[in-house]
Length: 513
Ligand SMILES: Cc1cc2nc3c(=O)[nH]c(=O)nc-3n(C[C@H](O)[C@H](O)[C@H](O)COP(=O)(O)OP(=O)(O)OC[C@H]3O[C@@H](n4cnc5c(N)ncnc54)[C@H](O)[C@@H]3O)c2cc1C
Ligand SMILES: *[C@@H]1O[C@H](CO)[C@@H](O)[C@H](O)[C@H]1NC(C)=O
Ligand SMILES: *[C@@H]1O[C@H](CO)[C@@H](O)[C@H](O)[C@H]1NC(C)=O
Ligand SMILES: *[C@@H]1O[C@H](CO)[C@@H](O)[C@H](O)[C@H]1NC(C)=O
Ligand SMILES: *[C@@H]1O[C@H](CO)[C@@H](O)[C@H](O)[C@H]1NC(C)=O
Ligand SMILES: *[C@@H]1O[C@H](CO)[C@@H](O)[C@H](O)[C@H]1NC(C)=O
Ligand SMILES: *[C@@H]1O[C@H](CO)[C@@H](O)[C@H](O)[C@H]1NC(C)=O
Image (cartoon, rainbow, N blue to C red; front, side, top):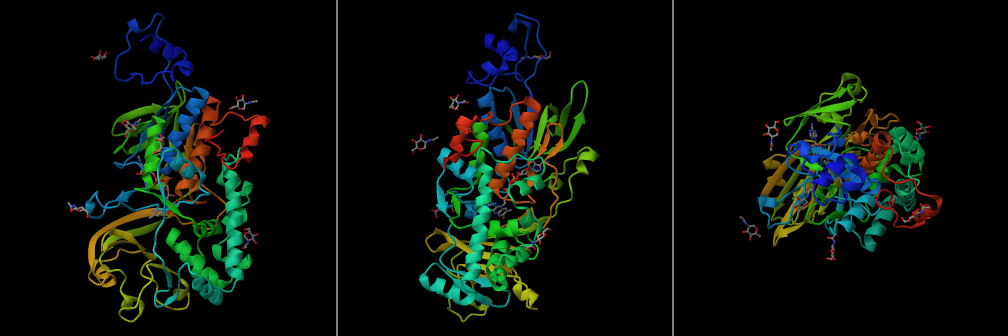
């Protein structure tokens, strides 16, 4: 127990040589533990609210900084749900764990998502190709406009329909955006207190201030391609149409080439972040209020069912307006209202290898594409609105029985499902999400810093809402917080000599700094 006393005085050196957690709160400290008078030093504590992509990665980044700087601090994570992952979570068909689990929320990421890519490598998680079958169709609510697959004939069909220039211009716009996005991983990556600052420094201001339709049209993309192909992508990815969603959301939706998911569920990345961080995780524990105390020293008091606990710093990693947390009114009013897209996810299994051709106005026995995406263009021309945003087959769960995922604005009734799958529906699972912000063109964002030592990860979401970008937002927040409160930041300031590693393709800031 010598080291115990020492730790209080020299937290930086001792804490990381001990393979166990010191029992500050489980055992009473007595005079016998000390040779000198008891100093009233406590290990500083940081609270993280939310255990999704943002909160779990925040805990992970803090643990990286602890290793690098020998910081001694404790991290408590509060999560109101009984699981880690937030909007990344899976279910088993029929609740049968012998069957392959299905993603209910976030499904895909790409190689430009360097944190998730790196994490899945380091954590030995298997990335699999995201499978939606071989044919994709575009449905306008009354008519299947077009369908395509991967063959040469499909390319010909696409060129006949859209010309060469629209797909090519779109690809150029998207590649340019991806290239700018990758600046977020270099040693010189921007740090930001304000998301508008970030948008400016990455050269995304024009995109975030304009609707996808306008931005791509100005960039030389035809209306037809935008309203059929780009809108299909914005509707499946963000439940929004191209006149409503800003061009960062539009480009992000089109950047899904080479999409991957983690075998067994993306949430495993977030579980690993949490596990490796050594944070104390309190599941099924909702935070109900956060208040500021200024004396004897400034701190934040967090109220949960476990009681009131004081923290030196707080990271909010959930969309504020959905948390039900009471904040000091000056802080609450600094966070603008943020509407979210309310989305119905219907997962089901069916023994019908194809959706009902009659529903799509096709002859009985004709084949319907295994993925049906939608456009709002029909409605603009006085047609009926599609009853769903997307409907896709996701492979077999066992011989003769397929998994299907449908996104829609409204609940789909059992009768609707039975009609769509020819009375061959097995298991059905419904989930409603406040899925992602309405990505309205804007140049103002929620504050990243809510108070001294109090930071907001989801301020980034109205700019871009993905699993990956939440890990980037948390990296920034952890860096700012540790800089402010502990004088360190996440990474040591790199010398000019060592900065050359940033030219190395594999360098990812936060991991390799
Ligand atoms: C259907 C769907 C499909 C999507 N598809 C993709 C995709 O393919 N790829 C992609 O990258 N992204 C996708 N997204 C978006 C992605 O899921 C989110 O951007 C990302 O997961 C958000 O992570 P987060 O940690 O910021 O928030 P969340 O995952 O929402 O985590 C916040 C956590 O905070 C908890 N919480 C809230 N209030 C409290 C409280 N008072 N006390 C304690 N805990 C609280 C919540 O329970 C939740 O677990 C999709 C989202 C949905 C819904
Ligand atoms: C710790 O102290 C409290 C109050 O002083 C006492 O009630 C409790 O029994 C002590 N616990 C142990 C394990 O000594
Ligand atoms: C779960 O699925 C497996 C594989 O199809 C099957 O063998 C098993 O009987 C199922 N279990 C239950 C409880 O239905
Ligand atoms: C990952 O898997 C490889 C091979 O299966 C193994 O050698 C390695 O130790 C594993 N790493 C971790 C971090 O689990
Ligand atoms: C986008 O917005 C900016 C400023 O709001 C404006 O100057 C620009 O012309 C717009 N671009 C497009 C493509 O609409
Ligand atoms: C990490 O996971 C292992 C195995 O699943 C578990 O035994 C351990 O308690 C976890 N550690 C933390 C800090 O959550
Ligand atoms: C560069 O990095 C190496 C390895 O991390 C380290 O040993 C060295 O001290 C660094 N050089 C400078 C000048 O910081």
